Length: 513
Image (cartoon, rainbow, N blue to C red; front, side):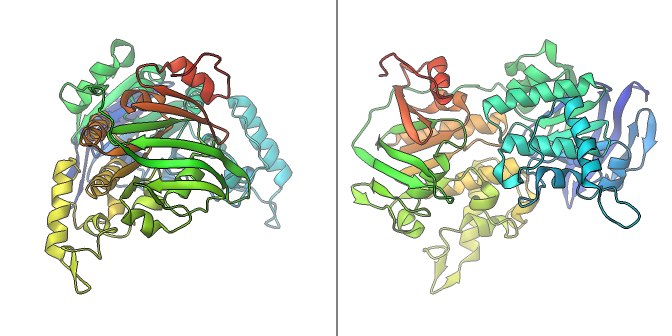
């Protein structure tokens, strides 16, 4: 396709390698003005790298970038912004202690001749942008006090404040609730109506179908093709992305439940601010059972998990694993009693980004044989164990064991964390948002792995904001709202509409079985 002013972005012959690993191989991309264009690919396919080149975070080894039909030399993000390109990263770049307004104008403040910021003038300008794009947010709130969805709006406002015409969103729905996803899609459509061009990096097929006009598919560093989304289905996009047929739901047979393994009995827990966020909550999990907790974020899930794993005190009630009380002990005691956890925030709790992949894989095993002896680590055993996890969970690149964890894509980091925790052979596996940031092929594998663990008699506590995931995998489904269990269903009797109603705080007058 020839270079044209009808296209906001055209990239030609883009090449990029990190060491011996070729991430992008002669990639061409064409993004029409005033459209929502998706970049779809597996974890490690190169989609984020391609957009980081467009935004100036990386420099291509070869190739050219054209904006509105003119060649552009984008060597850094400052030049990208000057060329009308903004990017909202998967992990937001906001200052918690600052207000929304302070975060929006930070780094681009207009000052008078004395170097003083006219905050009234800046606020007026931001309010005009909010009205134009219907991005309602409280400018006086501090970032730490607003939801993840609102924080994402702040990032979008930051970009619009800087005058961008092309907005790149990296995995924009990965951390959002279903309602926040709906809001984001509306925001993207409003941006396009106002003449902006939106590029989303994603592997979420449902959101692509609902939001995008066109979709470029990247597989193992190569552009497989670009398609009109209206001509595709979730299934066809999945097959193009991974190069094979993919099951969008896992096969599961009814489980043969065994004895009670884990029990939460009438516990109450307070948040860091002293607010009671878990209220007299009880449930049990049996051998061979996946117990799913569905709910909108902020209804006590965080405090519940922290209480179970020993990093938050239980105000009242008991938590038992195999009949032994573990509440108010320690995280190490919880781990030693056969509980492993896949955290929802892999960067904060799941890994140490500056450590190598191999070092991260033995964080909870470094004092155990055969990984250490007489206080000395056995590097060869550690590396062999890591290579096995890399192969089993299809982590890319394959030769990453000595790479820093930070250098891997988010999805590949998640695969490694999941593999490490499952390798502990726990009696109870707690999986919190286990497929967040994973592509459809990896999601298929992780969900199948959870089913296989269940079939081996393991107890699993699954907490997810994605109702589809709960319905697909869990044997028993409880809904948490305002710190309480407000309904419990077996998988066979679960109804998506009833559960959604309860998640939103509604009432269900029917008997729940």
